[in-house]
Length: 426
Image (cartoon, rainbow, N blue to C red; front, side, top):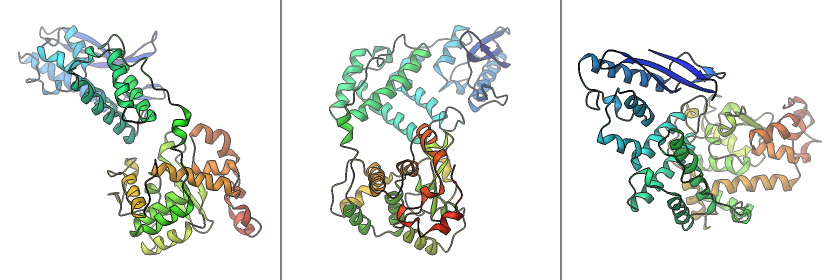
């Protein structure tokens, strides 16, 4: 009923599908390949999207065999089917065009929802995947755009012009920072309208030339370092031990917000004073974790947590009982249902301070600057501990680190024995 072919001229894979129409004749339909690729070639095992499509076509054939007309009533699977598939089936005479098709293909909300549904599928894909956080950003952009255009009585995406795109940009810049609007416009341009052009729903992309320029001085003020005394007072204001543990992991390692949530006790080496920190952001680039020192300021609270948790197994998570974190399988998601930044702001206010621009990112920046200023570690080591992009990390830091890099310079003459027990990191 279906096989996969390749358009060599365009380099695209496609699904070649055949089914019987109402006259009992075989009809062939070429649709974009919706399965999974393995080493650049189609995977023989049907993907969820491919299975869904094949089941839809089987339902349509059953309708014809029973003498029925395939509609959303007789074939419920037609609800939510991709606009391009509907168009192909109509062009081949398999489906009749109805008044509701215009709304499904070009309706403002329906269009954004369809695009968003495809992006949601990518959160579970092995290749060309996106994180749940990225999907949430797409979803927020959808909500903002639908609300904006609905207020202007635009119900059809074909009505959106370049002037409307510029108006949306100006509207958002009046209430949000340029860096935020820059991302929103980028998502509208590439995730939504560019794909509408590729699916031939639109002849042009109204956001193609709509861009936001960000002046460097507009973002450096958000890269703020926080005084050590301020951070100490915030830490003292946290009465919940589990929250204090999470705070200290962020404060002294410079980790990203999601990383300590996935840290297991097997990654804490008390003997050699090392931490192997998970790195979900770079895992897809082949760097699932990074090694850093177990800093003197952090070690006492980790030892206390280890005893309070009654010396847990190596597979147990270090941070527990906050943010509705599951006790197992946290790798399935990038973030918990709750936002850690909200609670961090609450702790800052409780300590008597006004929350700084980006609480979690500013903690990370502060720790990096402290380590660079201390002179205890080389610059390449500090950048590797903090964790940069895969390309920068691999090219400049990862292959050059040695055992000495993990020992403060002030301790190297006294900790020779520990140093000799450490393996060279490469």
